[in-house]
Image 1 (tube, helix red, strand yellow):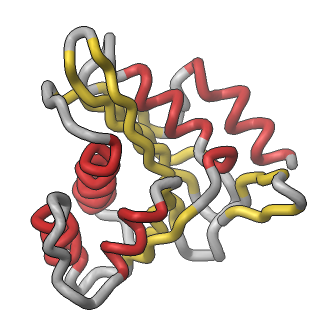
Image 2: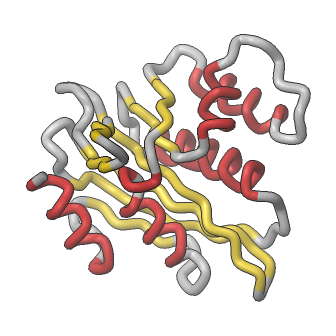
Amino acid sequence: MCECNNSISKWTPPPDGWMMANVDAAIFKDPPCIGMGVVIRDHSGKFISASCKKMHLQVDPELAEAITVRYAVVYAKGLNLQHVIVASDCLNIVSKVKAPAMDRSMVGPITQDIKNLIRGASFVFIHVPRGCNEAAHVIARLAHQNDGLMWCNDAQVSIRAILCNERLN
C-alpha cells in the first residue's frame, strides 16, 4: 500500500492474491472536463492494466474524485479482477465509501452507487499520500487529450519509469 516515513512516501504492493488499483482525478478548465486515471498492479508490483477517461463535467475536486473511484471499481470489475484494493489520495471519498451510514452530501449518490457495485465482491478502499499515486495522476492528466484509452500488460510510455522506480524501491 503506502509506507510513510517522515513525509517520504513510497508505493508498496498489495498482499499476495490482491490487486492494487491506484486512482486519481484531474480537473481541466479549457474545455471544462475531468480526467480519470486508474493504474492496476499485482502483489509483485507488476503492471496489469491502466485506463484514462474524460468526462465533460464542471465539478469540484471531491466530486471528481468520487466519480473516478466509481470508474475504477467498474473498470476492475470489467477486467474480472478479484480482491482489489482501491487506493486514492482523497481521504474524504475513501472515508465516505467506507462509512456504513448514508452519505447525504453532494457525492452521496456516487458513494452509495460504489457501495452497491462492490456488494458481494472483495474490494477494500484505502487512503494513500499523493506521492503513492503518481502513476494514476499521470494517467488522469492524459485524459485531457486522449479520451477512453486502455493499456493491458504493457504500460503507457509516460508511466513506465514511475512504475519501474516504485517497483525497485
